[in-house]
Image (cartoon, rainbow, N blue to C red; front, side):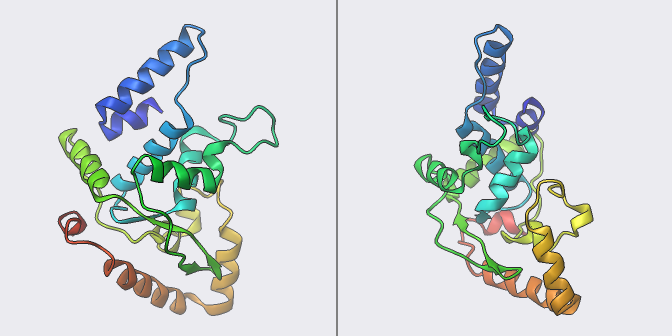
Length: 202
């Protein structure tokens, strides 16, 4: 978490994280909150180029990648709040990070909830990144993390519940249709980018 916070260059988030880690080291049990885990995950996705929309499942997988599945669990069969799509969706709305999930595009014959990020939040995060010397990646449509990445190269390979569906879909329809789907999704989401985000998107 400390490495990610340093990488993102957010002084406020880093300060809160350091305070929590200090409390933990002193035996006070303080840790980053579930909401802070979601915030760091969102900021990392913005760094990766998701400036306009993010898939809710992507936010959760990024959080899982950062802290591991056991974070916040009291028992092995517990589901931490930060892995609950309903709770994560409520948090991002309450904190003003994103609007309610109104888009449900299909991928691998399933629907995925996609949220529109708040432009002012995106602008603040991008400014923090640039001020810290980190250049955000070019714009990506919200399902690119799966659609445009081979499973064996995916950062979420050991966390992903989409791999089996993707493999079945490619086997059924072929790679040529997947290339068409990539172009279709890119055109679809490019049309949703507001003018205040164009300067990020390259």
